[in-house]
Each structure stands twice: as C-alpha cells, then as structure tokens.
Image (tube, rainbow, N blue to C red):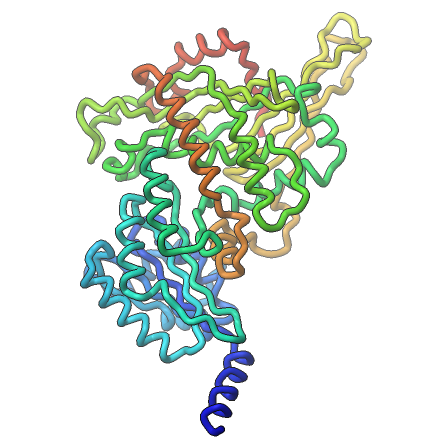
Length: 484
C-alpha cells in the first residue's frame, strides 16, 4: 500500500511539474551556430532561463566563454544581466559525434544533467554536414539518448532537428531517411529549411489566401511570368570544401528556392495544421519541370581554399521552369541565383499580363508587377498604371510600397527562433517532409543533367552577361523594371 501511494504521489508530482528542456546542439563552433543558433537560443530562453539547459557539442578543446563572446555581437537587443544568466545555462562538451566512446561519454554527461531536472524533454539539433547525420544518429540511439519512458501523465518528448541540406543527392537522402527512421518516428523529426521560418516568406501565405484581390488573379489567366531571385554579393566564405561538392543547384535551388516556389504556386490547404501544408507543397513540386538552364562560375573561384583547381562547380544559375498544373501551365518560372553578384537580393517578381481591352492610344499599356523582396530589408511593392499627364507617351507606372517591418512595435523574431519554437511545441511548419525532399532532389538532378559547363563571369557583375542575354532572347524574359 505504501509503495502504491509513493508511486501515485510521484505521478501526481510529474503531472504538476513543468518539463525542463535540454537542448543539445551539435556543431556549436560553426558559423551557423555563432551567427544564428546561439542568438536564437538566447531569445527563446531569456524569459524562462530556469526551464532550459543548453549543452553544446564540438570537436575543439575550447572555453565556452569564447564561443559565447563570438556569438554575442550577433544577438539583437541583448540585456547584459540576462546574458550573464544565459551563460550559466550554456555548457560545452568536447566530442567527435562519429565516435562511439565520445557519444557514450556525452550520454553520461546528459543523463547526469537530467537527474537534476526531472522531468526532462530533449531536443537534439544537428548543425553539421549531412554526411554526419546518419552515423551520429545511430550512435545517439545506441547511447540511449533517443530512448525514454513515457510518463503516465505528462508530455515527455525527444525531438531531433536536421539542418539542410538533407543528403547530397536523392540516393544519399533516401539512405539517410531510412537510417533515421530506424530510431525515430516522423513526429519526432524536423528537417529544417530556415527560409520557411522567415517572417516575410511565411507571409506569402497571408498575401495569397487572406486577400481575395490577389488570389482571384493568381493564375495563368492573369500572370505572364514569375521570377525567383536569390543573389549574393559574397563568395563561398571559407566553405570551399563543402561548396565545391554541392554548387549552386544543390546549395540553394534544391531547398530554399524550390520552397519559395511551392509557397507561390501551391493550392490552398484546407487547414494550416498537421501535414496538410506539406502535402500541398509536395503536390506543387510534382508538377515542376525545368526546361532550360545556364550556369556560371565567378572568376577566381578555383583559387579559393578547398576548391579543386579544375573545378567546374557552378556558382551561378539561370533556369526556366514550367509548372504543369491547371493554375500555372504555360507561365514560365525563371530562377536566378548566384554568388559574387552585383546586388544582394532574395525576391519574387510577378509580371501580370497587359490588359487586352485598353482604350489608351499612342502608348502601349505596360504590365503591372508585384514584387516581394524578402531580404535585405523586406519590402512588398506593386506597380500599376496611372495617368500623370494628358500626353499618353508620359504614362508610367505608379509604385505602391509596403515596408514590411516599418510599423512593428517590437523586435522582429529571427527565423531560427521560429525554428526552435516550432520544434519545442511539436509543430512542423518549418520542417520539410521527406517526400518533398525526395522530389526536390529529383528536380535538382534533372537540372544538373541538362546543364553545360559553367561560363566564367566577373565578380560584382550580373553573371555571365552574354549568355544571360541569349537566354533572355530565347525565352522572351521580361526583367522587373523597378527598384525598391
């Protein structure tokens, strides 16, 4: 009877207690962790520091103070007092996560920490190359860290996030998915593309489906062309070994750009919960067909550290796609992306068809453009035709601009805050389901099979200009005429 009362008391205590959350980050000494993950964790934890522990894992023998100080300059609106407290919940463990002995030692370290904070939920986040995902997940499971007794009452969970890219081609992605599913259920898995967590990109949903004026014209009946742009002014930033094995198609087209296209093109889901949105994104990807591509490589790329001297890895791509759905068939989607270009921009430019019933004479009515810039400084703009003069030749579009963040009263949450928040609450809004990843890899491989050797282009240019001009003439490309 006494034993039964003790058990019931323990169950009752667990039911009333809040779960402590141990967040373990693999790859804490990398750029991503320094610039994005640690600042996000600060903002996630700062309101309830007692409820979190952060265990950071890396191969280097390094003082955690050095890691945190390197990240501090990237933390927005930092409170010095809270930062001191944040440092107290941040611990570092040196380990090679592909070594069994190291992973077992890490398990002992985490399990001792768990005993101080029962009950505990665990979040593991892989900010390491995808080649490490499989071996590390196997060792993580064998160490016992992916096992846990579900309490009779309460909400115990173990969740794992994997940073993009998920594999390096369709075969490696498939093998990786099989390994991970040997130890984890789909509900525990979060395959992250942080572009889905960007506030301005998430709001494509609201723009389309919460405004009947746009959804009514969101089809091939009214739209002539769609341009998706992801241009960078920087180079490969010391990532030569990684980038030379991926290139621009695998690095950003296979994930970020295709995810943007799914949000622009997908049909309306019946709900924004569960996997309905993932299903709609997958259905859109099934209809994407890439019909032409040119690729380029900036001059001096082969001299970068970690890059092969004879590398033909592309750093620029321009692609024409068609989406064979009833809504989009016949509307070309143009992708432009590259490094070392003249201007940094992540945007979607949508050209509407010119009106066929214009009564203006002496001057052809111009097309309207809707432009969605996601970075830098998110802005939405719409160019439409208005009269400025009685002379038709002086007609020109008027541009209406919405400064996305101008009216915010508080700091805007950064993407990885949303990522960690979604994992903690068990939401998959910023997670990509495996069938989406598989289909995106199929599209990427289709593009790579059709591409020619890269054309060289100057740093700070628009890309290989002669080839771009030929591509534009071939496909009747209409460039966005405005500027933000």
